[in-house]
Every structure is written in C-alpha cells, then in structure tokens.
Image (cartoon, rainbow, N blue to C red; front, top):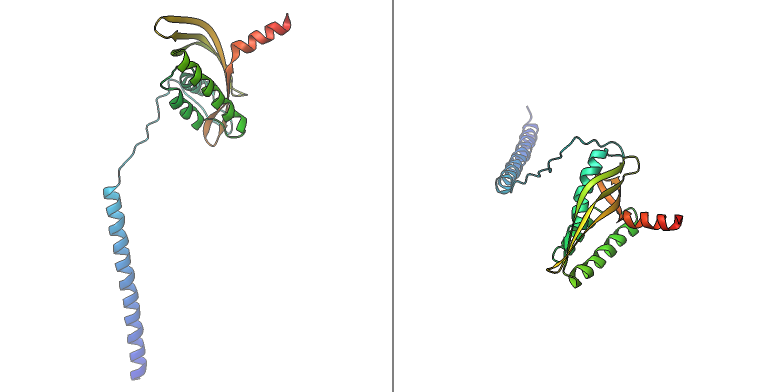
Length: 195
C-alpha cells in the first residue's frame, strides 16, 4: 500500500472522529442545558372551571347550555358592580369582547365609563339575580330575566325586575361578547311605539 494513500485515509478518519466528537460534546451540552431548564422551570396547571351541564362546541356554534353558563359569568361582571371594582370588571370583560367590529368594544367602554361615574357619585352597589333565560342557539343571543337590586349609600335600597340582552360570537376557540344592553328598555320602547 502506498504511504500517501494511507496518510490521506488516516487524516480523513481523524477528521471524521473530530467531527463526531464535536457533535457528541455539543449534544451533551444541549442535553445538560435542557435538563437544567426542566429542573428549574415552574410548573403551571390550568384548571377549567367546572361546568354544571354538558356543553358542545361545533364549527361556529355552541350549545345553549354553554351560552347559558357563559351568560351567567358575563352578567356577574357586567351587573354585580360597586365603585371599587368597575374598572377591574371592565378590563376582564374587554378581554372577552369580540374584536370583529370596533363598535363592540366601544359600547362596552361607554357602558363602564357611565357606570363608573354613577357608582362613584351615588355610592351605588348593584347585583343581578337571574330568574330565567331565553336562549337562541342559532344566533348566539341570550335574554336574561331577573331582579336588579341596587343599594344607594347606606340607606337607599331598590329592587326591580329587569331583563338584559347579550349577543355572542364564537371566534378563535372562544365565546366572545358582542353586545350587551337592557332588554327592559327595548320592550318599553316597542310598547310605546305600539300605543
């Protein structure tokens, strides 16, 4: 065998060995770094709130039980208010407000701006108790009927029947609020027009 051929063969083997050694060292370093990251990483578990009935979600539609339960969550944040928590509840609702039209967020902001002024000026606290709901699964609209209880200052108290309409859209895997308004006022307006 020729000495130059043997030298070239051995130098190729040495280069390959060095390359594989470098790759092995690199893999060992990345494995050590990954192990360190896993060992120091804080584990978070996301808990889904319990649902009281079965819900179904299909392409762009959700079941009436899901609409009912989400309406309860939204009504709590929209109507169970005091001057202390208006801004917090506004921020919470805006996270789940539809962004398909800018007017949806604008109306919610206007509602909470008006509420903030009223609740501070009159030392107002309100909460809404739902009696029943009309749910339109096809359109994603809910009308909640119940009692709105208001406390003014230390001595004022008022409890009146009220209805509120909510409309939702299913977007990006979430049920998002489009609109919220008093359905009682709409009924009164229709009754006045019919007279």
